[in-house]
Image (cartoon, rainbow, N blue to C red; front, top):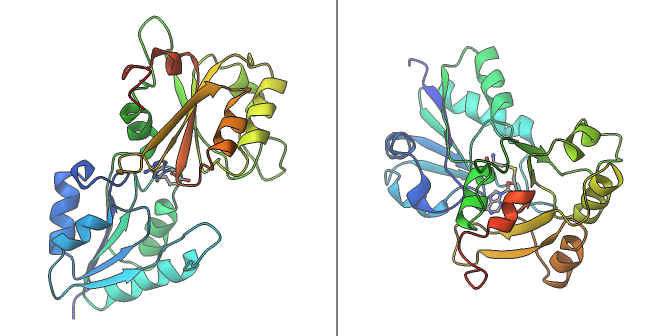
Length: 248
Ligand code: SAH
């Protein structure tokens, strides 16, 4: 049997409408789909009735399939001739491990390609009425991982530069360490009254947006019991509040 193919499909942040046309085509054609909880699960209804669907979900602190096992499954199924779709939330190459999956396939001689998706880092702020840049106000944005705080040895982010970058900061995977992150930015020179917002479950019916400043947001998020998936936006653009103060 000839070797199959692996397609890394970025599913967008959860709303099926934000899956790309190319992503939908790949999903409809797939023999095997490996998905996790951040992918737009409603789109799985588009798969063929005979397709094999495998949940390799990585719920924080819950059930998860180790990355090495996911890589091995991709290779194994493609090697037996299948068209394998790795269906992920957002974009596969933004703070996910899509590039490692690509490398695992390439090392095994399996053809692999990526279909980019709409990152939650882009869609989440937009759906909360927050543009990431705005002419005359902010000309740059950074997307950073908040899975560890600024003072943690495992963080490779230059938090000093970030705090003084004058741009918008988008933090993914930063709910647990939100207080450390915000305090760390202020300690490094970010004005404490910088507008900040947290957007939880963007695109879903449970989407919630909480606004404050970089100094007040951790307390606001804690009182509201915000849980992942959520993202934080910090910067002058947050004050634009395009949807209006009553819309969130
Ligand atoms: N590759 C993905 C991000 C993976 S990291 C992307 O491009 O979107 C996972 C983090 O993404 C979560 O911890 C959360 O910060 C963010 N995230 C994913 N989906 C989200 C959603 N629907 N609403 C808010 N944040 C989301």
